[in-house]
Image (cartoon, rainbow, N blue to C red):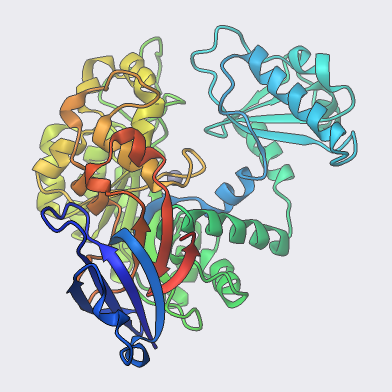
Length: 503
Ligand SMILES: [Zn+2]
């Protein structure tokens, strides 16, 4: 089928004030880009029959559709249902946010007084006070309260929640295994409910210009997404990762990276094998060449989850069956080891996060043609933690400019729910290394907006390319970092089909 997008503009065009383009799309592919004057040639009567469905973009700017190359989509959909705790500036403030929420809930008669409240997203690293059940108990009575930290490694409960869980704790703060068990008990939602939340989250993503995601949900994603797309959630292209516990199943099913899954309108494709090789910065488990300040013992340099030999064996087996590898590596040592493995196996793939990486390893990454799948907004979330934990090497953290200079294939993502599924936040962080008016952090790693948009797209705006497109009110190449961060998206198209329209 044919569609025509009328009166679009190309970002950065100079000396062409008032001129624009009409974009002709046939069966999802851009087949013509016509430069026109202020009055469109298509406005002439008699041409309408050729145009198919017409959408007038009214002079808005067109860019290639945006991808989020690292999300945990089910988790993101779930977290969006939870009380947002990200603005809490202290434990006391967090308790006040809960109190305010309970008050609003009772005013709106929204739920019974004993329905639990689940919150998510607090960051306690720099609070002056510490979470404690007593802080919550002051406000919450019989309502169970569960507040998860942004990395999901810690949960803070009130006394009612402890009672509900049959847990005793003098502080109400539970970490690691205890925390995961509680997370699991709260995540028991049926497929239908989760799919509805996922659909809602997909709508929000489309409204930010997202046309595709790589889903790293720890699940058998092939089936979940096939079901969702069949049930009408057709807003995003999805590539899904396979975890080691599902590798045999993927191989038995003949899944190969890049394959399209049948009966999904071409939207669902097989992604890579995902292996989590080390931990995270926030929990001081990212595997590094140096000791974390204040740590001693066998894990003072972080934790390697998978021994090098085991990593190679996994990657080799995946490669033999047509699956690329996506290796989670955050510390510099983990990144070196991941590259050693790519070198030894000779397979394609990506390093996920690559937060702290030696300069010689950036060169190796380029030579081996391994994708750097990075989350620029994490640099803004974690700059103070980096300065503290990786003080000696903070200049080697999130080195986007060095990666681009070395010709590494850089792709952006959010790692939602760790940061919001919004590519404009990643783009703004990458071009400014700044947020909330703070001074730029290691501005030598700032990159240009054109490069940032490229790292967020998979297609180009050209004849013969898929019509995955986004229409914007303002020219992104002339926008400030603050404007980029809150960029209004007027329309999103996946294969020419509108998935978001706010014209
Ligand atoms: Zn992740």
